[in-house]
Structures are given as structure tokens and as C-alpha cells.
Amino acid sequence: MTEGIDALRGNLSQALVGKEEAIDLLLVGLISAGHVLLEDVPGVGKTTLAKGLARSIDGSFRRIQFTPDLLPSDILGVSIYNPEDHSFEFKRGPIFSNVVLADEINRATPRTQSALLEAMNESQVSVDGETHLLSNPFIVIATQNPFEYEGTYPLPESQLDRFTLRLEIGYPGQAEEREVLLSHRFHEPVDLLSPVTTADEILAIQQKVKEVRVDESLLDYILQIGRASRDYEGIEIGVSPRGCLSLYRTAQAMALIRGRDYCVPDDVKQLAEPVLSHRLIYRRYSGVNSNHAIQEILKKIPVPV
Image 1 (cartoon, rainbow, N blue to C red):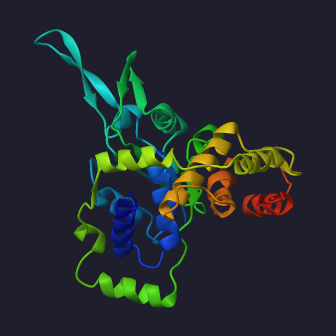
Image 2: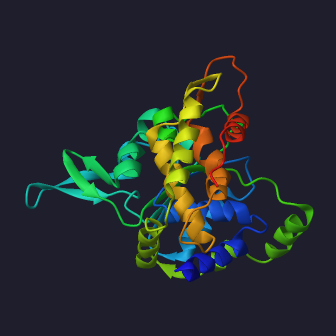
Image 3: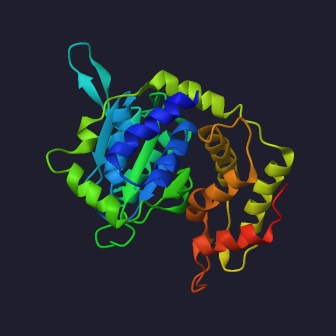
């Protein structure tokens, strides 16, 4: 089962050099049947990573460029009247794909952003009173620049909570950046990628993730982390039950990526920041930093042995 994961990792490493941790976290989001928010400065490979994943899977892929004039129907689809039989025919939007890249998601209005809520949570959309099931597997990979606020609409808490992980790619090292320059001399490496797995194989891996064993003590560890965030000074609203469930499921996924059929505490500790930090809401002027708060919580809770 890990052969497909290794093949995906190898393919993505050709498109994004020297970013193994970011690649693994993206794969964790995929095989845990979640969604991923890529948040970083422009030009570090957010879109490249998303396109690389789509090209590595023999499934459908659509890229949606979010802009202020984008409408919910541009994402979900629209019913068009057919004068021949006097009926309405639903034309599916780009959301009906296995991999959906929502590029610069915070540039769309809240109304358009909210069009993704039902899709991300239930893998379905409702249009004109009818429910339409989405493709399976289904993953939304959204990108945004956290430092550019002009002309943007910050994602509301309810939207952020739908993302299983938030990850940063970061600048490459000097050697890796040199390799990037050389690899782009004649072509874009991501455009040369070929599928190394199928949508059905991804579904099988997602099912395998659910079979990874999680000890009762590790389950309590996850719950203690979530509850500690709700009592942390400076945090208005802590991790939701959905957040705890995401940490549970992603820990299973990380274990499978590491070649194990059981979870260990390090799986939870490694994923605590990318899974939980974007779900925290702080008291105004508290000066609390999300990553610092998560690390402080991890230090205070005894690790199960």
C-alpha cells in the first residue's frame, strides 16, 4: 500500500525540490480525505505543489482563480433552461473534480468562499434545491498570501475549520534554489510529470488509513491537547471537535506514510501545528502566537508511553 505513496512523493519531489516535509503534509491531507490550505509568500511553489499532485493522480483536475467578481455559480455550476423539452439542465462547475486548486482563495468575496463549505464538509453541493455528489476522491487545495491584505477577504473561522491542515513551504536553501534555477532552464518540471497512481488507488489508501491502530492512551493525548487549547490564556476559542478528529485522522495517515500500521506520539506532535494552529481564535491584544501556543500546550501535557 505504501508503494503508491512513495511514488507520489517521488513525483512531487521532482516538481518541488528540497521540500520533503511540505510534500509529506500534503500527502497526509490527501490520504486522510481532507483539504489543505497552502499559506506562504508568493513564488515559493504553492501552485506548483498543487498542480504536481493533480498531475500525479490519474484523475480530474481544475484550477479556479479566485477574484472579487467570482460568483458561487462559477464554482458549483448553474441550471440552464432547455427550450426543447422545457426543462432545466444542470451544468457542472469546476468543483466536480478530484483535485480542485482554489488559487488565492482570499481574493473572493465571503459569499463565494462560502460556496465551498458544503462541498468541503460533505463532498456534495446543493443547487436549486437539488443535491449533487462530488467526485471521489475529492480534495481542495487552496492558496493564499498571508502578508498581502489589499483587495482580500480573510477566510472566516468556519471556512478555516474545514481545512484539515495549513502548511507553509518556506524559502529553499541555497543549494536547492540553485537546482530550481537549473531545472527551469528549458521547461517547467511540473509540466513533465505523469500519473503514478489512480483515483481508485487513492480511495483504497484512504480506507487503509482508517485501519491504522490508535492506542487509547494516544486518543486521550489528542483530546487533552484539544481541551488545553480551550483553557489557554489569550485564546478566545480553542480547537473544535472537528479539529481533534482531524488530528486523529492525520496521525493515522502519517503513520501509514511512515510505513506503520499503528500511531506513535511523534505522529501527533508533528501534526499538532499544521492541523490545529489555524483553528484557534485569540483574544484581542493578547499577543498570543498560534504556533507558540501549540508548542506550549505540547510541553505541558505528558506524552503517553
